[in-house]
Image (cartoon, rainbow, N blue to C red; front, side, top):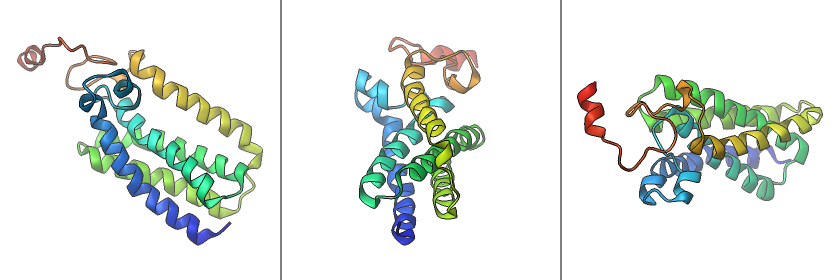
Amino acid sequence: MNKRILTLSELFGVFFCLAVSLFLLNFYHLSGGSTLGAVFGAVNGSVWERVKCAALPYMLFGLLELFCAKPPFKSFVTSKALGLLAVSVFGAAFNYFTAETWLASLLTLAAGFGASLVSLLSGARSEGFFALSVFFIAFLFVSLFCFSAFPPRLGLFRDPATGLYGVIPTYFDYGAVALQS
């Protein structure tokens, strides 16, 4: 494993995923509210949807990195699962406390790629966590798609502008919400 190439690809990944993440934040509206836009884009301004828009490019870039850099498979999957956990946890925290979406996305992705890189370069024997890592990645992947359409009634999934969960109806009266607050 070439540490220099891996470090450069992780650094490039932060900025590549940031660009894709910012695009996905607007993809639902750009697609006219299509199903494809709802699956991959942010259907509202909730913390969950913002984390989804950072986690999906992170997973996609991980696949590209796996095929291009050719790191050791089991340790790479384990480190990417750790990075995905960091994207999820730090993404929720940064989106709660930072009003700037691009800054929260940048910090979230930097935390995820940083955790992954440290795990890979440390040389720690993490192959024992491979099965758990695969389960976590698969679980989060399915959750990212399911919770946009069927979100639990938790603050993490609540749109701050409307107070609604999940896909906002097209007939929603934003003026009434503004007058109420």
